[in-house]
Image (tube, rainbow, N blue to C red; front, side, top):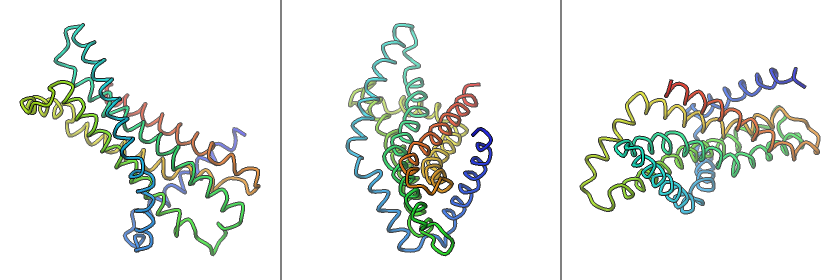
Length: 247
């Protein structure tokens, strides 16, 4: 079993490279592809947006209260916003969004691909991966990016209200503190991490199912296998990001 791990990794990398190249090609975005990608984006992001924003706001309110209280106890109240932005915006929300979308939409894509493989629909001459699953993968990746942006904005809004209330007089200090946290290098690294998360959630479940067995009994294993791959890659990326940012 261990001997198959390198081969499986090579297949995943090759499939991911092919899918990414297709997604970056302008010729891919025909009207049907754009329509299907938009529909998948609505299903993965828009349908859960109100509850997601409320959850991010509650999480942000809880964390800003804990950090603010702890910072005051140690005489570090001036670093409250810095600590909050680094913990919530740079680390927790992107990881939470990637896990949320992978469980909600990525697993479903992997299962669908496993069914197509069992039925023989992935044979040469029939290309449902490009016709239907590629646009859906694009929609899933876009959902990760969109929900991350919305979640970060909601968390920052909650932090402002928690620290300054609804007064506009804290805007200058808040903007200065956030600008110091999101230096150009940090912002570039954050953007790359979110992009990697989006590609991982969209591609890995499908790649895991494409190389799976053609037995019907293997279909229930498709979603867990893809999710394990997603979790491992997200953990490695998050660990590398923390090591580079705080080394």
